[in-house]
Structure formats: structure tokens, C-alpha cells
Length: 231
Image 1: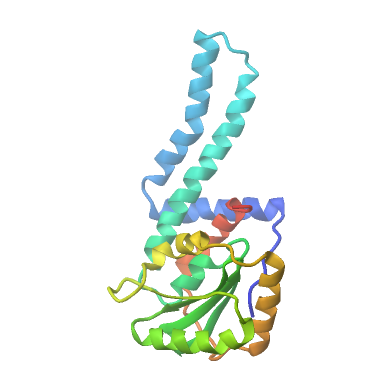
Image 2: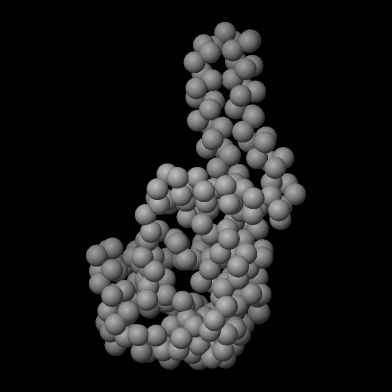
């Protein structure tokens, strides 16, 4: 079934950010230097303004908030880069990279030929998006799934994309989040929820094989979910 958006408490959000820091630091040598620079730079600037321009010490309060924001921005960028890089070539990567995007209800493995050839479904304000991965044979599977659900969604747009690193693919798996977010808004959230429920009632064509989702992508996506609420 489509995964609904989960509400996160402040404590759980801090936990996921902590996991992201550990996850990214283990795989990205530039992360700590960039993170330190992002956090320290606002304090350096404010100190210079206090000393040379006689700014009030209260400006350090602003420096705290700017430093926290800068640190989160760097963390998000470096985590996303690591997750995208490690997802390349791994089955289930497309689902792992879009799971948790606000405004989208994602169902993995609505159709599959094998544990490396499958179709995932996402429902949002753009309509319905079918993402296939696993090579050229999946394009036919995409067409079959589009035909199956078109009977249910009527005039709602249904997009199909084959993602991967082959020349025949529509775009790289690393671009899937960006492509999804750039799609036009064709329906409202109420209609999207209604369509998602109707499609869930259809059931899944083939159960997704066990163990296809890359663990590295799963480890990093929680942090992005915590930091990108509202985007």
C-alpha cells in the first residue's frame, strides 16, 4: 500500500539528524570540514562586526540561528550526495530515494519481473507517476501498468519513466527526486489522496521481492525527511 507521511516529533527529528551525521561522515571526507566552516563562519563574521563596527553582543543570538541553518543545509547537501552515489546500480534505489517526499504517496513494487526489474508507483499533485528500473524489458511492464491503472484514474495524468544508468533509460536514478518535484501540479491534494486509495484497492500486481531496497539509501533518507519538511 502507499506509504502515508509520518509525523515526526522533535526528539525523533534530532535522532535522524544524528544518524545522518554519522552516516555521511563515514562516507564523505569533506563533510566535517565543510560542516565546521558553515557553523563557525557566522560567529567569525559577527565577532568582526562587534570588534570593528561596535555591533551589539546581541547579534551573537542571530549567529546561533544562522549557524544552525547553515549546518543543516550542508548536512542535507552532503547526505543527499552520498545517498545518491551509493544508490546507483542497486535494485530498489528509485523507491528508496523518493520514499518520504512530502506530498507523495509511494508504493514500491506494484509490478515486477524479478528482484532487479520492477515498477514503483507515486501519487501526488502531478497525478500518478510510474517509475521503472532494471533495463529495457521494464518499459513494456510500465506500459502494461499504465494501461491497468488508467481505467481507474480516468483523465488524471499518468507519467511513466524508466530510470537507471543505461542509454535507453529516461534519466539517472540520482535525478529521480528532482524530476518528480518539477512535474506540473495537475490535481489537488484531496484528489491525490482519493486516487491513491482507489489504486491501493487494486492491489499489487506482483509482490516486491524481499531485500531489494539498498540499505545505504534507507539509512540516509530519514535525515532528509527530517530536514526537508515543508519543501
